[in-house]
Amino acid sequence: MRITLGVTGGIAAYKSAELVRRLQDEGHTIQVIMTQAAREFITPLTFAALSGQRVITDLFTKQPGGEGSLDSAIDHIAVAQKTDLLLVAPATADILAKFARGVADDFLTTLYLASTAPMVIAPAMNVNMWQHAATQENVAALRARGVRIVDPNEGYLACGMTGSGRLADQEEILKAVREAARAEQDMVGETVLVTAGPTCEDIDPVRFLTNRSSGKMGYAVATAAARRGAKVTLVSGPTALETPRGVQRVDVRSTEEMQRAVQAKFPACTIAIFAAAVADYRPAEKARQKIKRKEDALTLRLEPNPDILATAAKGKGERLVVGFAAETEHMAENARKKLTQKNADLIVANDVAAEGAGFDADTNIVTLFSRDGRDRPLPQLSKAEVAQCILDEALRLRGGLKSKPASRRAGD
Image (cartoon, rainbow, N blue to C red; front, side, top):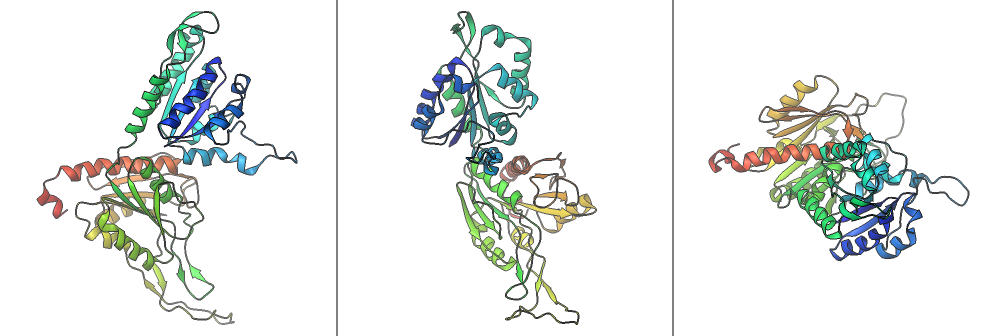
């Protein structure tokens, strides 16, 4: 597991060095992020030496020429996507307040907002600061969002006072990390097949038909499923995205190639999620040489491509099948029709003309249409968050399929 460890400015920061070692002993890879205040108590060099990883200390890394690095400006997104668990120890009252209120003014707070990974926080501070109503309200808000709080211990504090505020013992923190990791492994035993990206249909050696799909949604689903313990195969059309960690990727170009890859992988899966934006049509004939420009109009004769979703779902058996519907009008009506016609269990529909929901965006606005009649509209979320919602709904429906008598499942 890749754990991102946030270290904030308190005297207990020195204890985080040993925590890095303990987490490594349990087989985790540790990426350390330090706030500016944390560097007043312990140096980044200490954590770099222990973790073997670059320690992130600033949101914008200064280059020799004095200009900010573009890579560093988006590092928080890259780190968020690679993080399996976010641990902050010690966490000051300041960082608790920023997390609770959504303030993003440094790398750690920005990462917190960008990450969908489970989170564990171990506060440490003066007893009066810990017991203050503002701090307790912030802690309650974070707990309500699913954050695991490892309450501080009582004892003698660095300020000379006695009471609650000491960083919890390492065993308590490690226990919370283990529990958070187990809670997120709810897809262990599932084999998930995901399609993503566009397909390309060649017209001649230099031209082709395609669409605007970036593949981000399908890749987010594959990433989330792998983090939750599933064995994941990603069948991907052409895209510049990196292969998610722990995911087997099969690259294809055309719709027919994608269909063959799906047919090869579908029998082994328990959940199939068809997020790819496949081309519905292809040129009836592909020119062997480049078609030269002429003054006359050019007519292309198109023929339909195979329907990958419908073909797979026709013989799905006990497998759960999820399809996508990118619509520009009558979204709900078209999605419900597709749900029935394609024999799917869940359709993820969105209006691609809506702001924040179209191709190549980092956010999406979708409604989940389930075969059992439940419609679940979601607000605008990051595609990583949408992916988690899709998997939550898929597991809910999968549980229903598992509970059905065998005779009913065979004909579903």
